[in-house]
Length: 244
Length: 40
Image (cartoon, rainbow over all chains, first blue to last red; front, side, top):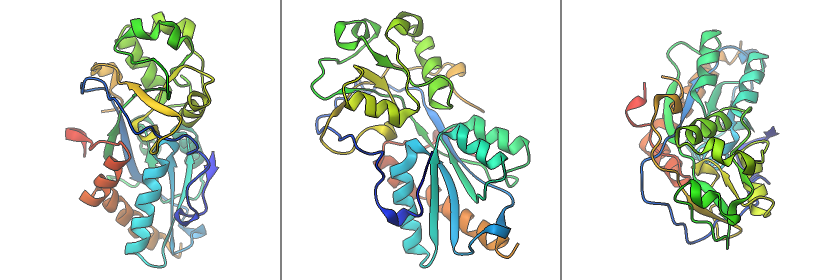
């Protein structure tokens, strides 16, 4: 997990992969998504700086959260937004361990629900603020333009990172979606795993793997080493939709 | 608990920013879509 002292400290090292100029989002189909939820956390005010908002956030939201933090600081001079980035599971655990936190920006609903059940969120404060998708990225120059499992079975995609099934929420959702598409079992021999989505992006950018599933927030923002190869077709089965 | 209420007010203001049109534009620029009809 990476901690950033404030949003004024600039971009993180996690954004080392560039974004290609020529994205080719596939087919414009609607796709399944992760819900991004934001809630206010109870307690820990005694250790707070009164001019600081402490907000752990899913690492896949790092750039977006940083920009939001800068906007907030401009509107509230003297106030610093202090983000702490990590997997939503890890951040949930930190909150449960009484880490000093004011708000939590989770990439999944389950973590928020767990905190709410434990009485760690301010009643009624949880909001769904966005949804995320699951594009497939490949190294720039890859021949992969997947429109189905057959493409992913080709030599251009012999090593695919579906995410790590354990750290939530991205891994389990990727597995759910790939199962719903009927891809999971077929692609199992090609699977390699990554620590989190940013790690997936790095592995793809370095060419260590042929493709990987990430969040749209993990798509690189500048020309560089990656391209979006595809977005899997619609998966809106209830099992692929987290939470309520 | 010197700053509990102020902390919560600031955190709530940050949440309001995220949910505002401006905040949603920021999220959209980073590839995150509006929550659709599931917000509460």
